[in-house]
Length: 217
Ligand code: E4P
Image (tube, rainbow, N blue to C red):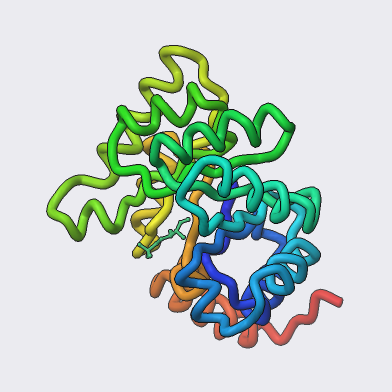
């Protein structure tokens, strides 16, 4: 399972990439606005920090505009994945950009039927938004299971990128449901390692080791 960071904060990406466990990054217009920096500059820096896909979202809403913006974004670095919304125009742009050999992440997916269309259009990634579905009173994880079943039934090679992740439990459940990747906010990523019994156990081991008076080196 690939783990992506869902942020445009270069400092945090550099900090967490040092763990060696960050495969890629996703951004969106909200996250770019939050960074307060020019998009092309931020995306270029992020692409230098991780080897895997870095999603950069188009701002146009018509297919031609998305294709032009997508070509420009893809030229920033070879690991850019052009992010397009799940609309008819977005799917047209997906077909063309993937035909040109670019990675495409189709975002704002809230139903299995939408995910089927994105795969048929040639998406590299489909981004179902788990947290926003849960917020809406639906079961976000069920959507991951449905998409997994459809993609497996028809051997689509589009990767399921679980998005809008809110908790460490979401990450584990997305893995159980068969998501290929999860994009995770930095605070949730940091929390993935936490368990009180790990801390307690280590404390006990260190105390007992100290009693032996030994040294391994
Ligand atoms: C995905 O690519 C989006 O950037 C992101 O996961 C949206 O998450 P949110 O619902 O927390 O804004």
